Image 1 (cartoon, rainbow, N blue to C red):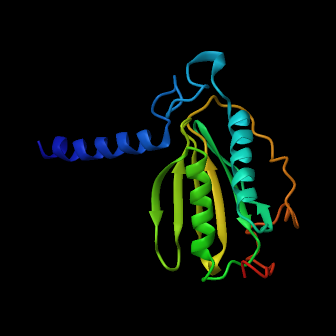
Image 2 (image 1 turned 90 degrees about the vertical axis):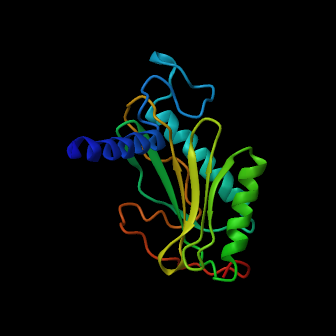
Image 3 (image 1 turned 45 degrees about the horizontal axis):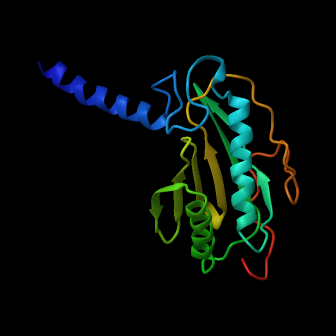
Length: 189
């Protein structure tokens, strides 16, 4: 009986993780959107990566004045893809909240739903989701470097090409981990 009782919480945790990842239902995309459905009409990983790139490009354009950025690694999972951008501009501790507020305002204006806001003084972040189920975030991590990520919902498996957008600074192609922020800005730094 104890084994059964212990198995129930583990099963609930697994179901919760699958629901959050969007991989529990292969027939539809979580969150709705025009690409829902099954079969050949569903978005594939490459299309999801391109859509993620467009979302990251848009939020970076909204963060005025311009920030220098580089592509982070692209990762794939069983049924989704994640694109990343690393901000190479130094964002001072005094400007981090401004950075986050501008990203959040852009996402709200774009009809994204804000899922969470982390007000941590060292590692603040904002997490949002689109109607189509894409998760987007901006977070500050080690040495105050800002990172942007876009995670697709569950999509059809396919090959994923590297991003085509040109970084507005060094590409750091093949360099991992990326260097810490090293570009000064009169506003952000």
